[in-house]
Length: 314
Image 1 (cartoon, helix red, strand yellow):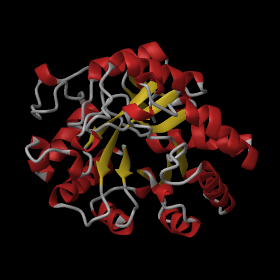
Image 2: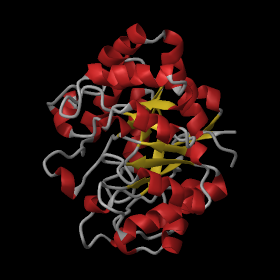
Image 3: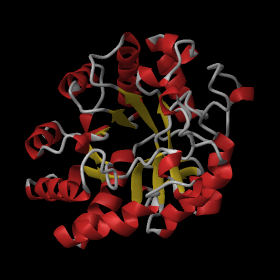
Image 4: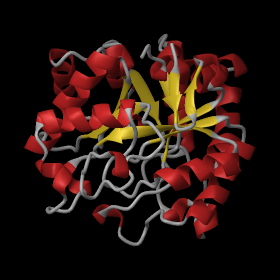
């Protein structure tokens, strides 16, 4: 079993303390004025993440949203962080109507996701050209796709089928972006029908609906729960999220929780002039979890669970 980082394959036990969901670079029509587009500022921000107690992070920026393969390698070297990068696509609202990725067929998406996992991430993914000249030296380590609160669009359905098919063939992990997880049970059924193993899946942002009974029902399907709302009071204060975390641990789901922050905006990165920054999770939120639960539980969530989610046999 290995974990595929941008610097090469590593043994799962080498992954260390992992933030399961962040973005070094990101540009989207939905985030106008809040872009992450500075290599220098992002490198400094992720150095803050490393200093706050993390060894690795998962970069969840998918195809067509401002990925920078060479600069992400440089960021890894500067910060000292191991990085597992996404292939896949976001929910349709993150793309302009003319972006070529939204017109790709299921077969096209399967080819693209597989290529980025096995050969290399595209240097310029605005054209979707698969060629040696357009292939970077980094490989993706998992697949992401996105859904919104509405029923899935035709593009999102194609992305789901492609992600499930490739994951079923290769064993790689899947991340599902959700807004409030209103369609999640239909989505999980579809993933299984197309060959995905739900033990390889994380449902991101699920703590935006902090209902332990709802979470327990989802977790009973075998998926990981992605908790990434720390420091984002526009959704819920930390105290609510700590209570949710504690309740899920008491219900026996500690082995299915992944922790990140998805800070994801220049207005939230200290080095871009915002806050609370990437260091908030380690410096402010984790101490609250340790008080409420234990160091053993926090270690499981930061170290054991991410390795179990990401590890596969190529």
